Length: 131
Figure 1 (cartoon, rainbow, N blue to C red):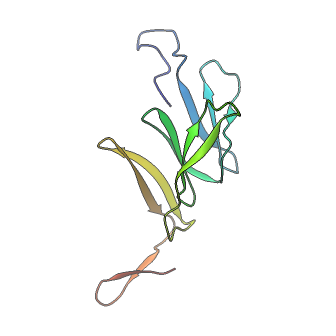
Figure 2: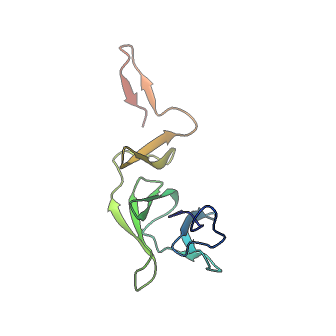
């Protein structure tokens, strides 16, 4: 969500600048809607599925299952689209969930291993990838 949907806490009027973005459906499609819209609008994207979308510094950023980061341009003349701003990191796996978090004013990538370990230790407690 880009801003509070209400103009003020006590106001019954809605903020027309509020935008809500979401990931939906089996294909994890990016979409958005504005206060007053009657439908969601899909965002043209270079890949799918997407793991996370966040609002940061006036823009929506999304990360796909490979770790590719896109910024959403909702006002493009040819329709809303996502533009790649960071390629996928090396050695990413579909079993790693990708997120973005804001910390101390920066947008940081975070990965979470789903369903098991990707690393194993040796006798000297050194970790190595199993893949």
